[in-house]
Structure formats: structure tokens, C-alpha cells
Length: 201
Ligand code: C5P
Image 1 (spheres, rainbow, N blue to C red):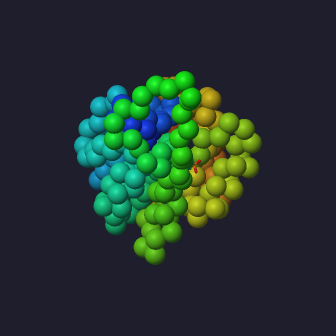
Image 2: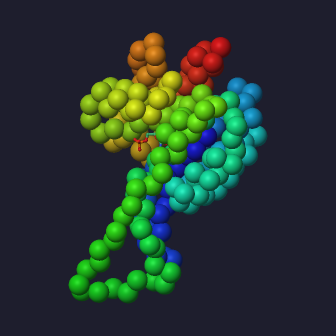
């Protein structure tokens, strides 16, 4: 399970990141462990404590997250909850960049898509993705599920979820859409793990 944001260095003291708190990913890790799974949580920077019985690997960048995830394979299930940065700075400065009235231009390059890469492996685990959208949730989420070749994708509206303690999720799979009404993230995570178990069985 991946969780949290990634942090992409600009220089030794600055970076690019996002508003993911890691709460949903940690709740999913807890729910999976409660259900009897052996769980490895690959976590970007968060302020959260690890759920009981969950092994955690801390990472910062998308590249580190990718290496940690690939190092844990093979596994039966991969749940990508992390809000991975789409871009990183091409060549992060090794010394602090000095302020200049001329401004600063950063050259960004695309990060690897960890979930798409894992889902495309010949012996791919059962892959679950998360899609935070700001509009047209069903349309974007189902398109993302098919593009990344995922049996299950969890959609939510970013502005209603990021950093909050509750979430309203919609599960997209081959059988259609299943709405989980707004409640706390641990309850949502337990419902997601139940749904996942029913698909695996
Ligand atoms: O960013 P996007 O909306 O494509 O994210 C959808 C899913 O893909 C999420 O589950 C996220 O964790 C995963 N992802 C990833 N690596 C990326 C981008 C997204 O694993 N570089």
C-alpha cells in the first residue's frame, strides 16, 4: 500500500509536494491488517503513526517510492493510495538556490507512474488505484481505471477529501459503480477491504 504525498526536491531546503495527509492510505493499511493481510506501507512524508502490525518504509520522492514498491513484489494485492507528484525537478540543485529578482525557472520532467507500471507487469498483483478528481468524477475515474488496466479504482472528489477525516468514495470495477456514503476514513477503508475481498474470492 502506498500513502501520503511525495516530495520532489528543488534544492536541499525546498521542494514540490501536495496536500495529501496520508490519512486514507494509513486507514486502508489498518483495515487490511485487521482483515488478516500482511501489510507493507510505503509512505511519503506524513505526521501519522503506523497502524498496529503494519511494516512501514518511509520515502520522499516518487522515484524512491517506485523503488520501494518494486522491491516488495511479488505480492497478491497492490493498493496505490499515494498522491504521487506527476513531475519532479529535472536537476535538483545541490546547494540552496539564492533569491534573485530575475525570478526562477524550473525544468520539470514526468515522474514514473508506479501504479501503471505495476499493473502492467506479467505477474501483476491485483491492483487498486485511487483517483482524486475535482469534477466529472465518474467519467475521469472510469477512464483512468481502463487506461491503467485496474480491476478496481476508488474515486473521490479531491476538495471534499484531502486532509479531512471523512471521505465519500465511489468504487469502480467490472461490475459497475458502488457508492460508499460519507463517513470517517477508517470505516471507508474497512468497506473497501471488504469489497476487495469479495472480488478476490
Ligand atoms: O495521479 P493519478 O490521478 O493518475 O493517480 C491515480 C492512481 O495512480 C493513484 O492510485 C496513485 O497512487 C497512482 N499513481 C502512481 N504513480 C504516479 C501517479 C499516480 O502510482 N506517478
